[in-house]
Amino acid sequence: MYQDLDAYWMPFTANRQFKKAPRLLARADGMYFWTPEGRQVLDGVAGLWCVNAGHARPKIVQAIQQQAAELDYAPPFQMGHPKAFELAERLVKITPPGMNKVFYTNSGSESVETALKMAIAYHRVRGEGQRTRLIGRERGYHGVNFGGISVGGMVANRKMFGTLLAGVDHIRHTHDPARNAYSRGQPAHGAEFADDLERLIALHDASTIAAVIVEPVAGSTGVLIPPQGYLQRLREICDKHGILLIFDEVITGFGRTGQPFAAQTFGVTPDLMTVAKGITNGCVPMGAVFVKQAIHDAFMQGPEHLIEFFHGYTYSAHPLACAAALGTLDTYADDGLLTRASEMQAYFADAVHSLKGLPHVIDVRNIGLVGGIELASRPEEPAKRAFEVFLDCWEHGVLIRTTGDTIALSPPLIIEKSHIDRIVSTVADAIRRVR
Ligand code: PMP
Image (cartoon, rainbow, N blue to C red):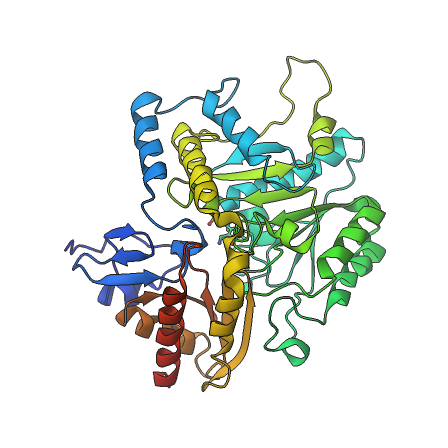
């Protein structure tokens, strides 16, 4: 095993603790990882909410290998390559109605920055340049760049980094355990949280507000499912006031909630949608922003030889990423994975809700193939109890994820009932053992 762990400063990791007892992964296939020592670990989180088709899928591996040999790189500015166009055409066949333009990025964070800039620029090209305010939500996670942490609502991700973007406000999050604990699917109460948006509009005037950004299901901040009617109400308020609605579907995109996108699961179409992760099954970094036709068209004016949107990345539409994404879409189609979560969700829901009544468990939440199990925090050590459950599961061959004292499960969509049983029973045993 490679021993020298010193030079690598790991992201979102307790580096000093990790390096005393490292957890390394050396290989993966299907539902499993293997450690360098050959220990098998069942993947309960699709890597990091991204390996939706399971690991090492042949069509994706071959697509990447072939592409690397054929066209390793192509500049994306004023140039193109065929797979970038083919992929966009394929993507807009599965997006919600009217979202038929695709702008590529390399990550969820970049998708968010792109969407925020696009929203502000859209108003400007239409002569409403005063619409620059952005509205996010408490407990929102929109990546780690300055725009994303500004509209995001995770205190730990914000507080070290200065003044952030000006002109940003937040509506409240929708987590309401007093009324909604142990909801299956969408909680019944809380559509009125959307009315916070009306209060901010009254405060600032709609004519100053560019866009609202929310995750349809907040993942990284504890698996918060939108209350019934909540997203519809946000949509109505945005429509009434000419404000763009952005869904951050970096986690929910590509089948997680039972439809290709959560917008379809919940029946609400945003104006812009950010994706990443599952677009390439996690194999090659890639993200995208899906855009409504009318928003794209607003930019298509002025002399034809001039660039319409001054934004993009060296690796936008990277050939390896496009090839991986095409292989991924084929694999999703072959195995019916974009709707498989809807077939598995009743079994998954029964399994995760069976944890109700165990010590420390104070809430269980689920939709599609995503579940959250919230534990009571030890007053003196927030987030430690769930992390100990994570370590215990790792020792017993199951990879889960925790955020605060919530355990998040988001397995590959190829999961079978026996895997669900194993993940949930391992979590249950770990919860019983934890102090
Ligand atoms: N938005 C959401 C909703 C996310 O969950 C994430 C990552 N978990 C991001 C943005 C950021 O994506 P990335 O880490 O690829 O930059």
